[in-house]
Image (cartoon, rainbow, N blue to C red; front, top):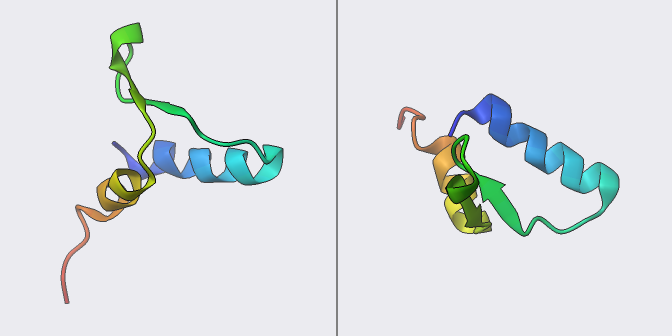
Length: 51
């Protein structure tokens, strides 16, 4: 998951004040998954370099 695409989810959730139930991880209908906030945050930072 790219952070540019992933960051949009947070902004939309805040602006619309709606829960995130599903997230698309590809382009097909079968690429929808139940949204897991912990996995989402881990994916956003998995490419970060440890200091």
